[in-house]
Length: 325
Image (cartoon, rainbow, N blue to C red; front, side, top):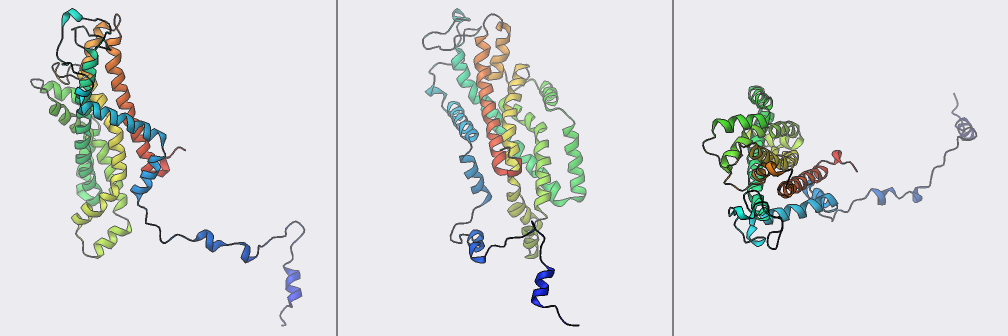
C-alpha cells in the first residue's frame, strides 16, 4: 500500500476555521535563559530563606523591637527607676501620679511604676525558663516516640494522652496547693513544665516521623550510621522548625499562666514583685482607682502580644503553607 504524500498528510491534519494554532519560532522562545540558574550564587538554606522573609515582615520588626525593650527592662531595671519596689509608705496610699512617680501609688503606698518595671523580670523569667524546659523535654519525648515507633511510641503516646487530658491551669493549681509551704520561681517553672510539654511532644513526634522517611536518613543508614546518631545529627535538626514555632507561641501563654496563678493566690508569694501579684492586689480598689490595675495589666498585655506576634511571624517564615498573604 502506498504511503500518503506530503500534500495528503497536510490536508488530513488541516484544522477547521477558528482552530488554528500558532507555534512561535524557536528563536523567539528563549526557554534556556528563563530556566537557567546562577550556579555561582551561594546555596540558600531554609533558615536563610526564613530570615529573608522575617526581615520583610512588619509584624516581626514591631514584635522584635517590643521584645528587645522588654528584655532590656528585665535585665536592667535600674536604668528606668532608682526606687525600691518593696518600699511602701501608707501615707502615699492611692496617691495620684506626681514627679518621680508617673503611675501613682497602690493601696499599700508602693510606687506602681517601680513595681511594674521590676515585675518584668519575674514574669519574663518564668516564661522563658518554662519555655526552654518545655521545648527540651517535649522535643526529646516526641522525638523518641516518632523515631523508634513500636512499643516506645505506644507507651510515650499513652503517657502524652494522660497529661493532655489534664487542664494545665487546673493541674497547676492542684500541685501548687499540695506544696504551698514554699513557693519560688523555680517551683512555678517546674509545675508549668510538668503540664506544658504535651503539645511540644505531639508536634515533635509528627515532625520526626516525617523526617525519618526522607532520603537523607536512608542514605545515612546505608553508610553505617547508628539510629541514635541519625536521630541526634540529622532527624532532630531537620525537625526544629515546627518545634521553634510552638515554643515561640507558647512563651506568651506561660507568662499569662504565671500571672493567672499569682492572681489566684497560688503562684508566687506576695513578697515577690510580679505583674500577676500586683493585678491581684489591685482588684480591691478597681472601682475607686482603676489606674493601679491598668499599668501592670497593660505591661502584661503588651509583652504577651509581642511574643504572639513573633510566633505568628516565625510560623509564616518557617512554614510557607501557613502564610495568609
